[in-house]
Length: 310
Image (tube, rainbow, N blue to C red; front, side):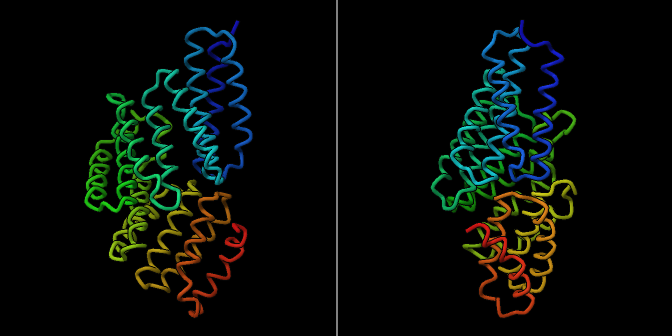
């Protein structure tokens, strides 16, 4: 007999609630629940369903798979994340949702770019190209802006500063045309703070090799900190840790410590592996200044988090 539309809507609401929770806190705390719901929807799809319901169920499966992928990535489970992103893209195709297929592919690109080194940067750039092709004519300016930030990230890892700058400008131009009321809910996280924080984070990556970029990194991340929604715990932690590191690179040790303590206040509220990795980077960055009393105090506070990663 299959599911009725009301039951499908309930599943859609569940999938959305999982996404909203992950956007706020991160850390994969509810990953098992998401995976369990994913398995249940997969079983439902094995049975014959009315055409309208089936298409929407594939959409639910795509949403759950993408959330499971992000949670897996945020928990350090890289291979599992890739599998779920691929499933999300396939399910979105079955649902007739090219925009969400593009979003899932962009997630795969982001996960590759988050790995150490530049080995995955070229593949990530290709995934962004494929995402644009899949979503051609169906992407809102906000989604297009997000894709340009992925391109910029790849360019930064490939050490192509002119390509990076160009992609950043294109991201800002497309975002200027954003109309949130027309955006799909799954891209609502990509607001002005996310744009600034993402660009700032990539400038910070570049400043680790060339400190001249640290000033721009600090400016962008500061803008993100000021405009970030208070319920975005994981993003706030990443912003503040990045800002602290930018100040260290610029030699502004006292300010780095002040921001660093603010960051750790937020870090303690999330179980995100990405946040813990970021703490480790700040810890290493402060090694040379550990003779400074303020730096030593900050490092003492970071040390248990760093040791927990080992």
